[in-house]
Amino acid sequence: MMGKQFIYEEIKTKILQWVEEDKQRMIELCSALVRCKTADPPGDTRDAMELVEQYMKQAKLPYRTLAIQESLPNLISSVELSGKGRHVMFNGHLDTMPAGEEPGWTDDPWSGKVADGMVWGRGAGDMKGGVAAMLFAYTYVARLKAYLPGKVSISLVSDEETGYGRGTGYLFERIPSEMAADCVFSAEPSGTEAVSFASKGYMQYSVRIATPGAIAGYSNDSRSAIRIAADIIRDLDELEHIEITLPPLLAEKLADAEWVKRHTELRGAGHAEQLSRITTDICTVRGGTLLCVIAPDCTFSATTVIPVGTDPYAVFRKIREIVARYPEAELFWEGIDSADISDPDGEAAHMLQDAAEELIGRRPVMTPDIAISDCRYWRYKGTPAYWYGPDSWRCSAADESVSVEEIFHVAATHALAAVKFLMAKKTSGRKTNHSFIVPPRNTDFTAEIKTLPAVRVAYTRHTASGFGDKELVPVIENGLYELYRALNAQGAAIGAIGMALYEMRRLPNGYEVDVVTAYPVGNEAIAGDGYEVMVLPSVEAAVAVHRGPLKTIGKTWRELGKQVKRQGLKPGRQYREVYILGDPNPEPLWITELQQTIE
Image 1 (cartoon, rainbow, N blue to C red):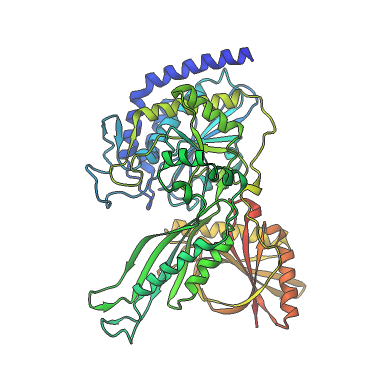
Image 2: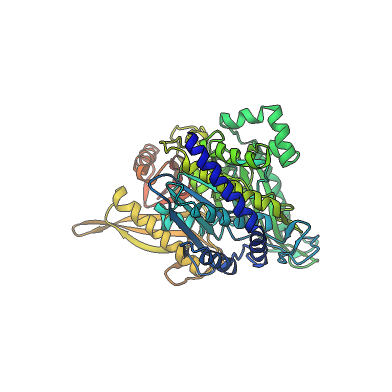
């Protein structure tokens, strides 16, 4: 133990010396990254990634880039250290929230100006300051190859802000073995007094309302689309009444008055209360044509944020039910992910706290957060993932900035935490218990008979050799993956929820299954390279919900068939599956809606 401690102190001295030598370079890198306009949407990060590649070449570090489309590059770099051991991953993103339209900017939002001990501009805090810190931390750990066992990696991605899976999610699809790690550190903006171990889940959607419209005053001829939107927005407040069962580790913290007091000091008044609430915020509203015309159209977008312990399907159903009250309205899903969590008392969490405390003399508080991050891709798999980064002054608002001193501190903290984790004896570890995040639910099987609305989809056609999981599931998964890639390449707006339709076709010597894989698209979508567009007609169907992976879906289909038969209904030839929640979420949380058409 004394030998390891001596080696650690020697390493620590080296790291702090390197940080001191590299301070100006860290500032310059952060400033240069901020000057790259990487607002998402559209999310073009090529200029910023070019800077990162230049840095990697100068540091003589190996790397490669992968992209689902040219404007959204992602980078992975790994260094094998001395001998077998654990794998530490640093992760961050290069895209930022949009900038320029908010009131209050006192300078160019993309200036990257360095003044008053801060770097100024959009993305300085979220999270280009953190990216600069992690690049140097990664470099320092790689230099220590002779001292450390295991492996260290860094992944820097596009598309974190929109959450469409074209960044970290895409890397997990393409190179899953390289993305697998024993712990993950991110420098998302937490402030140096807190380490984030959990995030709420989210549902992003838009609602489009269309009416005939009329001259103002003739409300007998047409309802106002904007008034209907206002009614729907009001009704969405009902989501707050959905039952939530917080996991004990969160419930205990929220019941601890001292913890709430400290959390409030760090995050602001009301933040602790938000952690246990379902909240809905209206993000954009567009509608109407002229001052004297009853609005014939209105579209609004909304984000419903759900705590750890919420059943996503209960929220999904309620949103759908609310919008369905208004026949003039159409619901379009943009993104759905469940909440995520890592153990706040885990080994890696304590090492991050220890490293920070050694440097500033104060132990950062373990705290859950509201905002999502790419940590979720690892947390969903049970891998401990924590974020600790410089505070983001006015994050996503005018005059965003980041403290240069905090960049230096985070670089040193991340490097030291990684060293601690790599030097520790590898154990089987304790992965996150997914009972933390799987909400209790009614397991009684129920089926509903309902009218499915018409929906416009982009689709591809395939054939499977049978209805079994081994024959059907790969065809559906590959079909949806290739369709998503094709739609992305065309720049099409894609609904978050994929679906499959299939029916049996008899052959002289047996049968095949015709399969259609599809994603909802807007009215503006047209057929493109590799896919067609059609409107699925409204149909009557028996509907049930399957929980869990697709490989176990056959049992739910059989139960649905029995219920249809018991009710004296004649099933149609077409089967539909709607994939409400799936990968990368934990398999116990996967939600598929089964729809058996009725003749």
